[in-house]
Length: 104
Image (cartoon, one colour):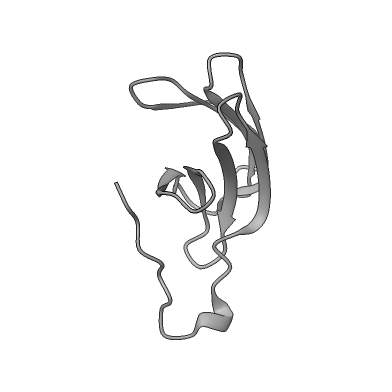
């Protein structure tokens, strides 16, 4: 999956990489958790420099995804902790081989 950049009508308003946390796995692939200021959601991007990158919406329930922190386990799977401002609580997301699983 290749995602195009959303420039919208006012690029100065967009901050798709705002509040970013990044980790690198043992194969040199980057894993980035970031808050999308335009859509108020948490996104996860992964890829290698000068290579293909993918971006996935992790959580879009209300105003969520601020202050993410990401870590990659020994299996290469990312784990993201982030704040949801709708309920003023923290959420945890674990990316397993099949899909993203969201839980509190």
